[in-house]
Structures are given as C-alpha cells and as structure tokens.
Image (cartoon, rainbow, N blue to C red; front, side, top):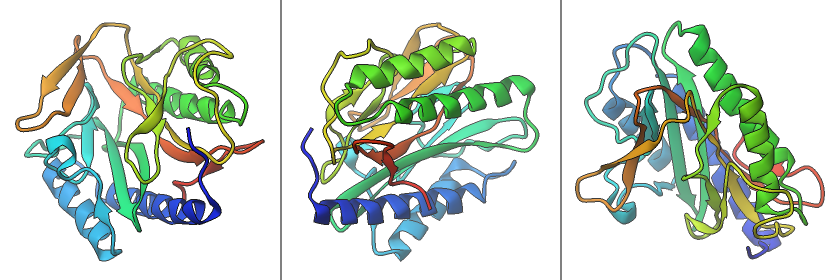
Amino acid sequence: MTPKTANDIRKMEEAGRLAAEALAYTGKFVKAGITTDELDKIANDFILSKDAISACIGYHGYPKAICTSINEVICHGVPGKRILKAGDIINIDITVIKNGFHGDTSSMFPVGEISERAKALMECAYGAREAGIEAAIAGNCTGDIGFAVDKYVTRKGFFAVREIGGHGIGRIFHEDPFVPSFGKKGKGPKLVKFGTITVEPMVNETGAPIRELEIPGSEITEFVTSDGKWSAQYEHTILITDGKPQILTQI
C-alpha cells in the first residue's frame, strides 16, 4: 500500500464524492418495473455529464457502466433486460474515474416493500461495512478489518463471503492489498497512513458455496449464491488515517 500525496488525496476526494452523487442519483430511479439497463444508462449519463467516465466499461471486457446485483446475485451483476419487481433488493455498484483517480461505492436499495428477512440482511451488510471501516486505522492490518466484519456478521446469524472483498484503489481501479471479510487480528498487510482502500463486505443468508457465472467477452465473472438465497453489500472508499478513517464516497 503506497501513501497518497496531498494532491492525490484531493483528487480522490473529488472522484469519491462524484461516485457517491452518481449512486444517490441512480438510486432515486429504483422502482418496480424499471430494467437494470435503464438504471445503467441513467448512471452513465450522469457520470458523463460531470466530465468523468465509468471505470467499469471495458474493464477486462466488462460491458456496462455499473453493476446491478439483485437478490441472489452477490456482485458483478450485469445490467440487462431484467425488470425489478416489488420485494426485490438490488445492489448498485458505481466506480468513476475523475482526473485520473477512482471513486468506488455501492449501496443496497429495496424495491417497494420488502420482507423482514431482507431488511435484516441489508442492515447486517451495512453494519458489517461500518465495523470494517472502524478497524481501518494506520498500523492495523487487513486482518483486523476482516476480523471485525466476520465477528459482526456471525453474531447477526449471516455469513460473510470470503472469496471476494475490498481492495486498494487510486490511479488504478484494483490495487493491493486485498481487504477480506474474515481474518485474524494483526495478520495481513499493514494499513499505511494516507493509503486508500475500499471496504465492501458481501453478506449472504447462508453459508452455501458461491458460484461464478461467465460474462460473455469478459474476464470478469458474476458471483451468485448456489442455493438461491439472497446477498447484500455496502461499499465505501476510505482514506486511512491515525484515527477514524475519512470516508471519500459520501456526499
């Protein structure tokens, strides 16, 4: 993990704020009857209007501007003709490039009235992200983040996905280190002051294995639960400090 300069941080702040704005704007259009393709166009048009671009389009062959992961889809759901239905939950994941730097964030959105179980799952994923961020202090390790996330999720009766997690970020979309949703305190790469990472725990209803689905023409794969149970995720890009991390992807 390489510390960012003061100029880098200013640009990361700008990219992060734009990603948060794009996510909030796109989320306003989540409703029963809309397609994920329509949400993709809404997000991309907004990003372009701000003199930025989506980091996702063409990334290792990924075809769309955002990821839209519904219900059983854990991450990397590709926008298409799927229509949102009342009772669904959807994760929208947006990464922008502004002035050469990346801002990466995601949030869950309910489609109309959802079940109590779905609410609990979403609340758990949100709390898991917050627990992970709280542990992201200079001098700690990635294992401290993973430990905090897994402890929180387990106590809520859900399951943190181990195969996928957060990452370093800056001029490059995915930098070292990998930021897991499980681990041991004091283990893994050290967190460096003024380093930037994403914290993005993915939380499943059950501990069933996950499946990878090919995305045509892309090296990126879509991850889904093998048992059809649901998944939820929240993500922020953060700046590591000596104390409370600075959240870059908020308005």
